[in-house]
Image 1 (cartoon, rainbow, N blue to C red):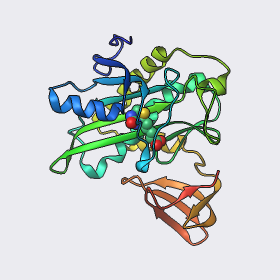
Image 2 (image 1 turned 90 degrees about the horizontal axis):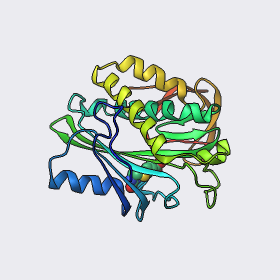
Image 3 (image 1 turned 180 degrees about the vertical axis):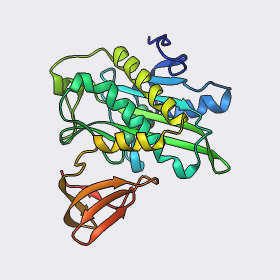
Image 4 (image 1 turned 90 degrees about the vertical axis):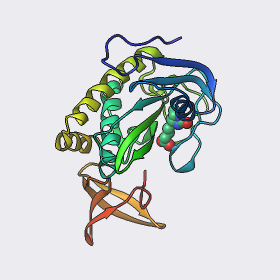
Length: 252
Ligand code: BTN
């Protein structure tokens, strides 16, 4: 069983480690409604029976081989219009926790998929609740393929598939807790410009010409920025254009 962490200030001071649950995001939400829990509380499970992905997708993960966990944050200092900065801070934390293992080709595919070259290694599902226009609670769900080798989807990979080595899940969770905490504290100091600049540099295709798809049509463009709402800014033949989260996809 994973025990609480000593090296952080608040992330992972309390950890609920379950053998199985439907979704760690849902379990953490239920616990939060039943009792008062502190910022930094983590629910992790060995097996998710109904893991949730972005856009209503399921998140599949081989039991006991990967990391599937959710972290409670209380970003009361963020207005709803700034919520994408939380996604950026979490992506940066994950990137820095993994980069020493992966070394090459680790990147973030906008908006917040963790990729190695053109294969997905992990994803983030953040579910926010609001008080007025401010964020009250954020359930930060993170799924990372660590030791899984079998039954990876064609566009998926794992840390073991990339490095050739089995890795200790608790050690990686500790790294994640530390790096996510540092970027969250940076966010708390409202260092938005620095967070955005760092996030943009990690993006798959940042300032390179790539192909994208919109409504079945493929076009070439260069990613030139991300706006405060998290929309991607592309330099296309028609000039600069911004696209929202579900409007375009990458051609990989
Ligand atoms: C994505 O679609 O890329 C996001 C995947 C997020 C999966 C994680 S696993 C832990 C947490 N619990 C869930 O049900 N989903 C997230």
